[in-house]
Amino acid sequence: MAEMAVQGSARDRQIEHAPALPPLVGDYESRRRTFSWEVARSWLQGDEAGHLNLAHEAVDRHASGPLADTVAIRFLDRAAPTTELTYRQLGERSDVTATALRLLGIRPGDGVCTLLPRSPELYLTVLGTLKAGAVYCPLFPAFGPEPVVERLRLGHIRLLVTDSLSYTRKVAPQRASLPDLEHVLVTDADQSGEDGAPEGTTAWADALGAGETAYDPGTFAVAPTRPDDPALLHFTSGTTGKPKGAVHVHEAILAHHVTAEFALDLRPGDVYWCTADPGWVTGTSYGILGPLSCGVTIVTDAADFDARRWFRILQDERVTVFYTAPTALRMLMRAGVGLAREHSFPQLRHVVSVGEPLNPEAVVWGLEAFGLPVHDTWWQTETGAIMVSNFPGMPVRPGSMGRPVPGVDVAVLRQGADGRAEVVDGTVRVLGPGEVGELALRPGWPSMFRAYLDDPDRYAKAFADGWYLSGDLARTDADGYVWFIGRADDVIKSAGHLIGPFEVESALMEHPAVAEVGVIGKPDPLAGEIVKAFVTLKVGHEPSPALARELIAFGRHRLGSVAPREIAFDQALPHTRSGKVMRRLLRARELGLPEGDLSTVETSVSTSASTSATTSAS
Ligand code: 6R9
Image 1 (cartoon, rainbow, N blue to C red):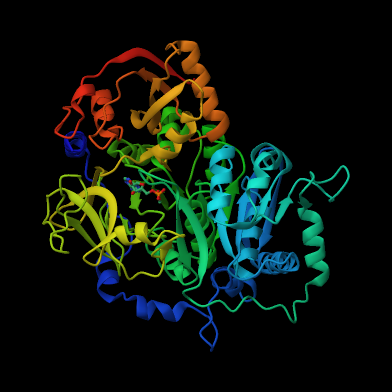
Image 2: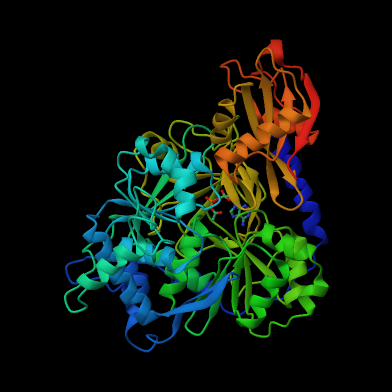
């Protein structure tokens, strides 16, 4: 725990230097007093029989009526002209997509994945899948073949929408190991069959064409889903074992909507840009569902990060609310405040951050670059929606994540020896202001995850004494602001993306020279953390910069963007007595921190014998 304590006090020091910032607009206190989820439910439309469909709630309410001809999504793409869909068009096109999926045999409860860049096909698949009553599961397009195939398999996915290249490179070689995967639609072929879609796939255009022919707006019906039926499956990473499939239900839309309104201040007339990829939870909850439910115009860009392009989008699209991540803000900062000042953003009301610790410098930089303080939000894949936020309407405390969302109870629980909340006779201890412990939430909001797919034990372990345990360490202050300290486990956050060390270690273990691997997050000024792997070689293999480079390439080929960026050879990795590599100790050594309690280290290997052959990817 020593490393966490040191990180925490480093943050505190920064915070003392940060100036006070002016309040935003609104009234948190009265919202918190008057809000209840029961009352908020009146926003939901549903039907008399109690059915509720997430996509219907998000889109169809605006597809007729005053916002019907408002642009719902504008698709920017460096390589193609901008296209857009109004709410009316989005409502109808997602009906057609649902019809196409039904024609292919997709039934309520079936899993549907996308492996796509930010394109109209992605957004239509999300909404069409939900309207068909099937379960939507996003895949991050920068994943390599292993994470893709693993998630398709674990999710029992029946239909995948992707492009020919991703299919041929990442899925086709292992298609035989995916018996549930019946259909693959490819978006870049205009016809199936010869010279069209790759073998084993169908052209999206053909499937949608069939949907179009069969679609009758007079008789089309959205699937009669129940509020508690599964709607979304989001894979997230834990410290051990396989990725965890967090299951969210249709009524989650109520939390997406309420938090998009409270924390992001979204309303009709807003032009909103969320830079998170829909492959991650932020990109669906707040890149698609929450904002659509608020009737805003979403701007989405298929291109990768480019500071000048981003400032230009903020300016030219007249973005009013910008939701992004600290890594992106640091990359904008690096381009210099001068570049920001070449542009003007008179429409911009809020710059909001999520996913990793927001350094007070970035908050202050926001003031210089945008004339606005960046305000932070905290939540997780499991919570489905923002849980803690610096709300418009209360003073931003730079360095703090803010205060609980109305309707959400937050507590800090006393830690045990393993850093997680201590449970004694089934009870936990709630700590007072200033004390560091595990951040916990009292379940009861609609976007709470309802299961880890096929893993009830892991789900049960996420709760104690009626609290959901977040795995994060935090403290509160006397006014109830929540301050992030660090993670209580070994999960890595790189550029805002959660990476499970076990998944990375398992992939590297497949290299013939590798005997054992321990993977940690190494602090990085831009990405927050990068993945660093400590590798023990098999007899007959010698550490060398060439082998390190080979391992980095090997990792990247299999894992894609979650691969290690740095390799160090270590013939004596520290182990617990039960034989697990002690990542915490590797990390403490890497950071030059006290090694803490070594009582569980296996004595024969407790002294480091790391060779200095560290190689970084460029
Ligand atoms: C939405 C999302 C969740 C983990 C979370 C924490 C970290 C998120 C943060 C933050 C510091 C913030 N995290 N927001 N850390 N300050 N404002 O990111 O979901 O990918 O599941 O990650 O991200 O460690 O536990 P997910």
